[in-house]
Amino acid sequence: MDYLNHLPDAIDMVATWNLPEDDLIEAIHQQASLMADITHFYRPPTSTPLQLPLDLH
Image: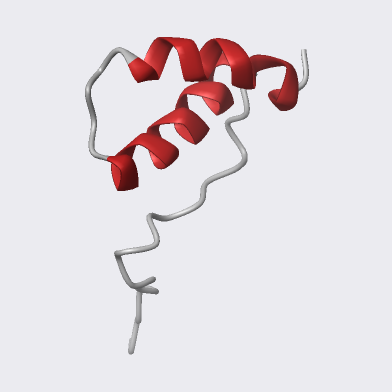
């Protein structure tokens, strides 16, 4: 099934977790991704800066 098909179920499931609003949106996204078995997609949290590994060798 598609990611969008899982959003309503993910919202119902995550809404019971009593998360703050900022974390709620990210948790819904992650839950819907898990339910749709999307393993190739990862979006870092918006509050954390993206850090790339630097190899100087």
